[in-house]
Image (cartoon, rainbow, N blue to C red):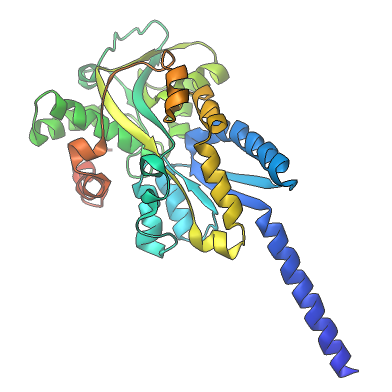
Length: 332
């Protein structure tokens, strides 16, 4: 009798474990940054439909959004993401550096350093551009209030900061001039929100500021949600903002959904995935889709983080680490 009970208990435990594994393999958690909310609403529906047609399986894609650096730390601290999709590579590198959740060479897994789309930093101003803001130099003038998210917690904020710094360098200035310029810019920042969505709320809904520094792909979304009360200004020079993605190996293996996670990332590079990206004003990197949408995206001088700062690791250490340049220049 005891032997039968033991076998029954083992059967129940095994069945429960198998059931949980099956459930896990049919779902994904994608931890992403603030301004991809609308993109992933469409992308996930398309992928779920694609997967159903390909395999017959019904799957669930769950999303988590927030300031990119804050999201990355949450995964390091135990948020079991199967996928992480950020707007800067340091917020994925940290998964290796702090938790060994992914391999060090994760950027070699997919084309374009595992970044299927890109964007750039632009200026959003009030309708009619009443302060006549045209380029970076205008942002350091007196009586100009600039809204930008915190570079310590937001990829959007980091790119805006580096774009301003790089503008000075590309115009022939040195690091001393760039530091002075960015210091003046942040003196014109009345409030630092933790993420891009919070900064948008401050500018658009609270009515604070004359100009919002944000990603190009966020502009049309703001207009769609809040009305055509704004104009977009493209600076003469800006930064190439790449949007990397990868599987979080430790958790995908734990959840037994690696093949699904692999397919999900692959779909970002497909023609269908790239078309959805373009629909949401993310610059596609598949040549055929990029060509088809070339009139949609303004051509301007873009520089990369590698080109001006020697890579993200150097930029992070010099500018955004505790005690770095940002801490030195920002006065609350």
